[in-house]
Amino acid sequence: MYFNKRVLVTGGAGFLGSHLCERLLAEGQDVLCVDNLYTGSKHHIAHLLSDHNFEFMRHDITFPMYVEVDEIYNLACPASPVHYQNDPVATTKVNVHGAINMLGLAKRRRAKILQASTSEVYGDPDVHPQPESYVGSVNPIGPRSCYDEGKRCAETLFFDYWRQHRLQIKIARIFNTYGPRMHPNDGRVVSNFIVQALNDQPITIYGDGSQTRSFAYVDDLIEGLVRLMKTDDAVTGPINLGNPGEFTILELAKKIIEITGSTSKIVHHPLPIDDPRKRKPDISLARDILKWQPAVDLDAGLEKTIAYFETLFSEK
Ligand code: NAD
Ligand code: UDP
Ligand code: UDP
Image (cartoon, rainbow, N blue to C red; front, top):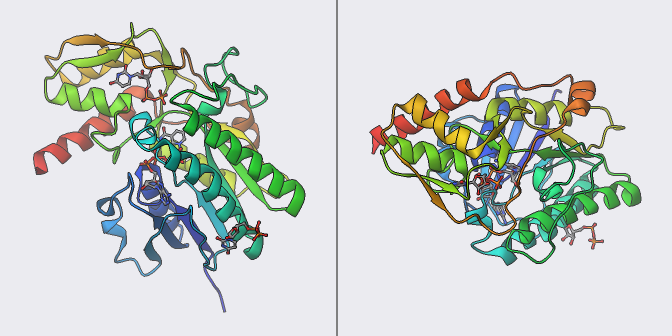
């Protein structure tokens, strides 16, 4: 008898998680989506509930969980600075206790486990672009530390379970990703600017806008995650997944104003503490090992994302 692979996606009702669930279902996998709906939403997965290969379970992964699965994508964690700083202790807990529980589950099941890590492990980088070998420059006691150090500790745990218990681990270091289903109020730069532009409100640039980011479109990112999970046991990562196109925040604002045809004006607000000055992935490893590189450039991705927000607002 043939059984589908049973795949657990933690944080599956979030932005990236819901796209990942969709993709895995399209491949015919049996998907268990676990989420406490802290920043995620049942709306993101409503269209998947009628698929008999899809199940949703409301659960906080900082608490133990016993389910029978073959693969785990560990995405549970608020990702936007506004959300992860809202309850910083919960952010560290989901990254540390949550990772321990999922690693314990993977150990009991001998399941393969992938961690959604982040470019934030590089902090405010002294090396540019950032290769995986760069160990980072992270403040352990600032307002971003719950996320940055939480994700760094999760990587430590993954490697210790790999060394100590011979788990099959995969670590993806995800750079800024955007696309449909970003929360309109989650405070991230792409969603903020699009929402402001569509409503002809001021575009809020923090600082002078000379800081840079590299933006990956969600479909490219999901393709990278799925490819990483399929690699053979020798591949653990960490592997950078992101789009090496680098833009200043001011360039991003101008692009969004232009594409939307908005009358919004740019205003400047103070730069948040420890805001990284630059960010750009070196994706040589992903190119070599995963045969992966982004296919969607910023203009094309922004157009799709803007269209999503236009529809969202027209339905209200
Ligand atoms: P998101 O906030 O939309 O999704 C996170 C999901 O995790 C939400 O559905 C939330 O409800 C859930 N969650 C939070 N705490 C939980 C808990 N204790 N138990 C169960 N579920 C919990 O964010 P996202 O952008 O989809 O990010 C997904 C993952 O990717 C995160 O781990 C994030 O750190 C990582 N990541 C994202 C980006 C990005 O640009 N989007 C960049 C780097 C890393
Ligand atoms: N755990 C879990 N689900 C499982 C197996 C383990 O949530 O299916 C949790 C368990 O609560 C434990 C953690 O994962 O606290 C780490 O498990 P591990 O086996 O590494 O540690 P131990 O149980 O020996 O402390
Ligand atoms: N940013 C901004 N205006 C906003 C939101 C964010 O200028 O309304 C800046 C922010 O200070 C940072 C960059 O845009 O320099 C990316 O911010 P985001 O929160 O999206 O991601 P992260 O800082 O985690 O890369």
